[in-house]
Image 1 (cartoon, rainbow, N blue to C red):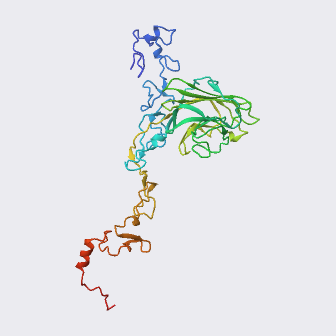
Image 2 (image 1 turned 90 degrees about the vertical axis):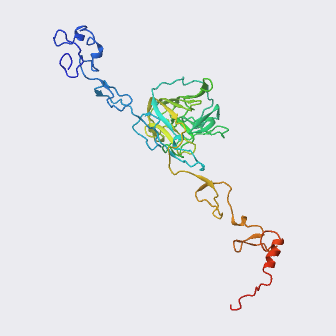
Image 3 (image 1 turned 135 degrees about the vertical axis):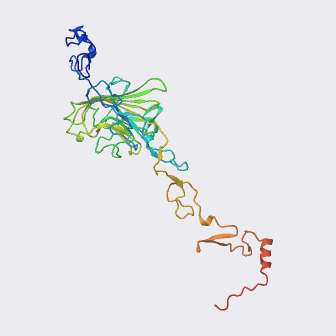
Length: 409
């Protein structure tokens, strides 16, 4: 009971017993005298305080009386971990990954954790002007730029790249063997991951745009090593199709040196249902299109985005927590060899064949598929590869013995 006789109330003192808390009487024109006693509805002495009421949430509010849906759960956010928690929003480094724990295997120590990212939404704030850096010249529809050298190795899904190409359709393509500009795929007929979509690539705002009609694309570098950033911006590009060219798309992508973190900032992209199934993808996929991450709701699902930002943070490599039976071995892959390994995935040139194991004085016989006495040396009785005293002694030991065939046969 508080001073007013209210169970769980807040009033600490009612000295004159008039039923009005002394805190309120001290400043009747103020916010209940002491604003800590005004609830979230502005009621003096009220008991409505919004916040997270779930005790296991990272932002649990002990003073909250009404849950406002803001609870944030921590846990494993990597979908390839065995303890993945789809409700978790904050990575707590608790993910458990299977992998190969046999030190003689070719993939020893490799696990799914080295292939992933924590993809989380952040407060929208575009760090650089959309015309930051150098503007590309002669940008065409469905265009992929000449390679841009990065000045450092940027790792995407653990693979280092030294250059990227910018697509007029809102993505970066990574191929260190590329030497010139080329065609940029515009059709989006699948979801990530898919080899029907560009790979390896980072999709800032992948949709069909036409910069030959309006808009500019810029790229630039900022900062000092080892914390430099590449900044790529698509500035008010027209959506392709004559019925949608009054709609503009703006986005910015930032690649961080050393950490390999990726920032996605999408200013706007409106719907264009008249073309390309209104497709839009925001995300990234690896070098063989088998692993990918997308912003929730933007894996060719929702066509509209306004002032949204995300971070893609690569998960660091870690040793497998348990063996999942995925070990791969190098060995002899020839089924005709004596040491053929049916589970080998790579030939290590260790195959041993019977014809290579014949001892001295013997040769391999294709007819019998065995080692036989070398016919070129019939007096090598002990088959040691030499005609010597040993052969003579063996002959003398049998001297006088009958070699006649069994006449009963």
